Image (cartoon, rainbow, N blue to C red; front, side):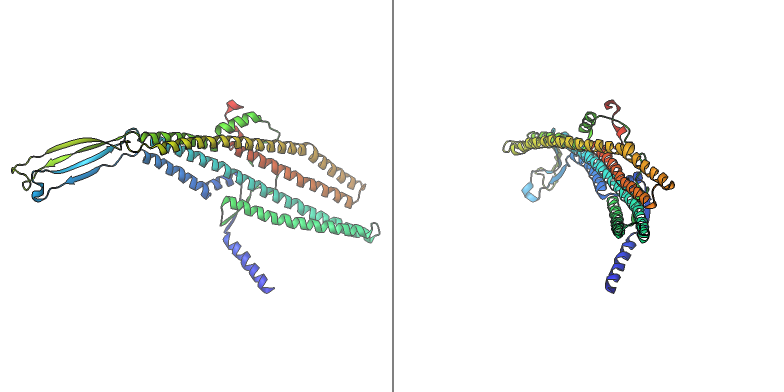
Length: 430
């Protein structure tokens, strides 16, 4: 037993040593922090910077070749020494390679932006989930206290002979069940907080939500109010298909494949080799004892496609265009389905939340208020009142679930659209 306790203390102490600071953070701060610290985002940004350098690499000029030819002894008598430069000029190739690099760089940028929206959604989802778990824990703490009061009240009534022993047993079961639910909720808060910090990619800081429980903090949680109406589905779908970054990246891949075909075909164009230099005699090798020196120049056609016509490269480039087009068309279908699913989730969650706000929540509050008045008038006893309050808290649990689903579904809709705010959409589409 002592060994178990000692091991537990070591584990808990180790975990505490890992955390040097606990900090509450707003949703907006959490998003900005995650975007600046997430390793995947940093790598995506570095890929974009690398692709910009690739553009310069693709546009590079060939380096010259400098050479010399020296005669030795009588073997070179009458032949001059030479020193010169050879330079190959590529014809109609650099521009095509540069175009490939440009489209690749743009595709990298679009991919980085797409990853950004996915990360923002993951932060929001984890933030909302932690808020939901904290809200549930708060309500279950109240339910635990109410169940204990009901149990105490039932025991007193049983002692007075007003209720049978079975009521006490039932009250004990209800209380123990509530305690169990409370303990589970407490562990869920810890687990949800760990997931949130995992998304935040923190090791020495434990972040927590700025809010203590879910409520109608729509503006603070970067969410549209459920009573507000905005675009219809067709406008949202058309905007998404025109502006979503993974689709834009796929379009750039099609352009890149088309440019690669031009590069492959450009191999059929010969290059020009320019030669220039200086020939000179020295007394040791001149046959007449005089210096006879002078410049020379020449030009060659090189890489003439007579033996090899680059057909495999050209055919593969054509196949790559077909693959890129198929990938784009397939992605369009997937995006249409995902935006439809996100829209459906959002509208259902919005309708449910509005129904809670206008009907169920109002009715529950009315019932609780009526129970309070009945208790004041001694029309019901404390046990009946506590039962009514417990039912109200159970309603609040389901309300918080509906609230969390609304926040999350709206965040998912924005993620699928690749916007941070619905107002980012072009006003002409509204």
